[in-house]
Image 1 (tube, rainbow, N blue to C red):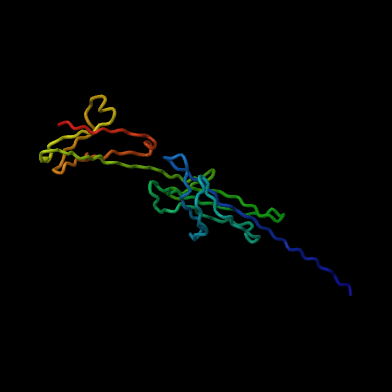
Image 2 (image 1 turned 90 degrees about the horizontal axis):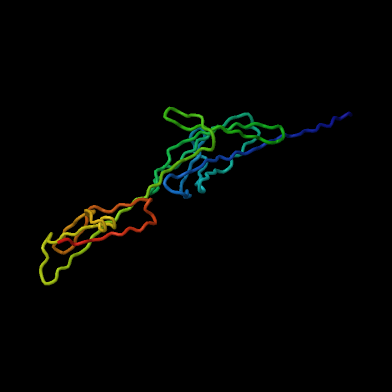
Length: 212
C-alpha cells in the first residue's frame, strides 16, 4: 500500500479592541471619578459599564475571533443620567464602528470610526470622544441677631439694624440690607448672602450696625 500522509494545519486569529473616551468638567480644574458610562451594542443591549478615571474613560477590551474577520460592529457610548449634586450631566452620545480585518499572520486588526449624535442622526467625529459636564457650587447664609433691652419691655420694630460689608461701612454707603427687631428681640436680614465656587477660599467680613 502506498499510504499518503496528510498534514492538516489549523489557522486561527484573534484580536481585541478597547473602547475609550474622555471626560472634562467645566467649572472646576480637576475631574472627579464619579461619572458612569454605558456601552451598548447595535441592538441597544448593554454590554459594559465604566467609571471615569479622571479625564480618562476606558471600557474592558472586546475580543474578536477569526469568524469576525471582514465584519463591522457598531457600539454606542452614553453617560448614565443619574443626578449628581452640583453637576449638569452630559447628554452627548457617540457611535463607534469597528472594522475587523485579518492580517494573515494570526492577528485580527481593528479600525474604528466615530460619529457623534446630533439632532437628526450622527455626524462624523474626529478624535477621542469627549463628554463634557458643568459644575456649579452655590451656597448662602442668612444673617440674624438679637437685641436685648434692659429695664424696659422691647416693642416690636423698635430698633433698626443695618448689614454692611467692608466697602459699605468704610465708604459710608447704603447698607446691604436692613431689619427690625421682633418682640423677642430677634432680627433677621431677609435676603440671604449668596456665594458660588468662585468664592471658595475667600473670607468675607460683614458688620451689623444698630441705627436707632
